[in-house]
Length: 90
Image (cartoon, rainbow, N blue to C red):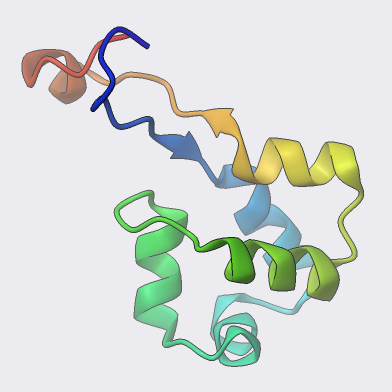
């Protein structure tokens, strides 16, 4: 990180995979989290951050171990061309 106000984006592809295979899909899982499927999609796309409480509930509902939790919530997203254009390179 180069600046103290720099936002870090995280990759949630693996979490989306676990939701599909362990929870039956995003719509049902969103209901279990107490949110709409649209809000869950925004969180999975990285447009809205997960709260600590939401992460904890995901871990419990999906029975994630420590490794799975780390790759679901803390894997940095790859920089895209549009990120580079906006100056969001690392």
